Length: 76
Image 1: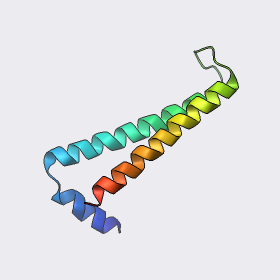
Image 2: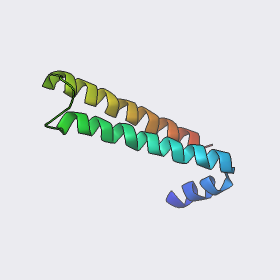
Image 3: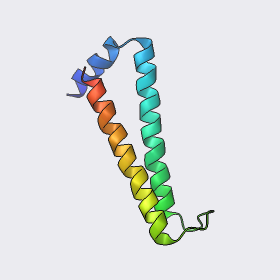
Image 4: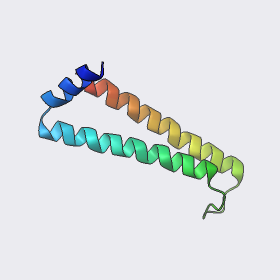
């Protein structure tokens, strides 16, 4: 399967590969930001723990949605 993905990436134009890399970077950014918000003890904004948890989970869910879209766009 990984071999198929690698061949598919090589078929893409330079612009499509660039957009794929940017999409992966933003997926990782949202995922890490969500985890930081949930687990950071000295969070700089004055938010209660429950709001931080909800906000972090929303960011992680959004990252998962972006990941699914990247995978679906890569199957073309």
